[in-house]
Length: 76
Image (tube, rainbow, N blue to C red):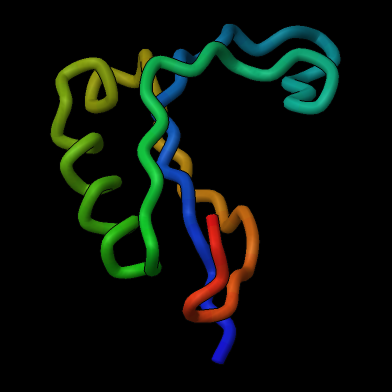
């Protein structure tokens, strides 16, 4: 069985420019990064981040990213 690992990332929101937001050329500044072993854990962590005042005010955002697959017993 292969499992997917997740990162939950709390970032600052940049103002929208004329060209939009390009995460590849200019990623948003990361405030906090937390790893999770399954999607359910990642969603719980993201839910906690979403309760923060800065996220609720629209100044920060929460992202859940699937970052890789690993087999049980495989070294990190």
